[in-house]
Length: 511
Image (cartoon, rainbow, N blue to C red; front, top):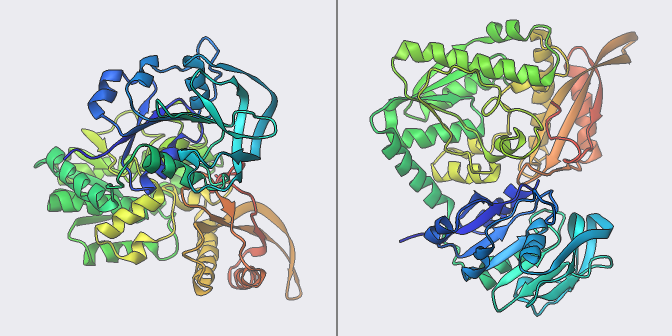
């Protein structure tokens, strides 16, 4: 039986992948397609609904991204978000103009609770606006179903054609009841049945991998983190011993992590496991390097070189598996997004790679979805809920140049931080937490002596999608205990700071 699908047409906005995540967490399968997708392909998919994403252009500009206007005659419910709603208005005969008052940030709107889109939604909600244009007059057949003080058509609908448009972003966490609004579109308007589960994704992906790989050999880039571990187990369930997992210990892992990873994958999983102790090799390459992007590229390239060397030892290898996930792809600037940082999984790779193809089975999943898949695959909770860890490791949590001595300092500080967070029972409620060794040195007093040592920064955020985040409000007494332990137990640290910046404007990692 063909599974229900919702299509998300991508017009290049910054929150586009969040829409896909919200749909999937409602147990509805969706595919993100470019706005240029032909109508015959859309008819072939036969989606239950279509969502137009936001975008940075103005619909009345000559180069504005525009889809085929005949899409509105397919009889498929459509929800246009921000630019998507303006485009719907523009193509169907309404007027979109430069807004007299630019709306950006949290705005209160009043909604018509009689609309299916606002079923069981509060009459007044705070939503996230981000636009310089607005709908000056709706297209024929549309009525207004929400408004703000400066936006008379914050939401519109044409119930005869099942067309809906909103000026705000229901997909972001800042919009109150935003997820429910999207669910109303999926279930009240599109009549979806919520039949897509992570268990089915895992089963279907394993089956697809088995068919694609056949009798060929696969090499997995195993870091020991959640993403690469789930990818490794998924491939293992598809092809068994045809998979060789190469774990590169680059000397930039957390305390004891190399030994823990080796124990888990040699004792609990039936895979060919190879550990490469390449610490000195990476330290030599990174000597004197301070620029974050250069660090990432050096580490990414060196990873691939190590894999090439190991691949030659085990014979012909057709595929390289990586644990790339959606936020990696988005933040690396593939497509229209600006480059925030390159990820060694998706950016900074050398031009010549001795593999037939790179496989990324988790490329379309967000972090929480990866964890759900991991549990479905039978991976122990301890590993599934391990703290996220970047491929370049501690190199990008050490500001400035990387040395073995600095790595040792950070390993100890980070271990104490994570240990105390776990003791306090906060480890599952905080999305990500870690220590950063800054390149700031300051004067301190320890005992009767004057010191001139490093400052360690503590980072902790609450997030579900890792696309946006707020700093975690850790109780002061716990922060105080962490600070006291690090300063007293870790040599060459005399000052602790706590980072209270959200994302945006900051990223979760410091580099």
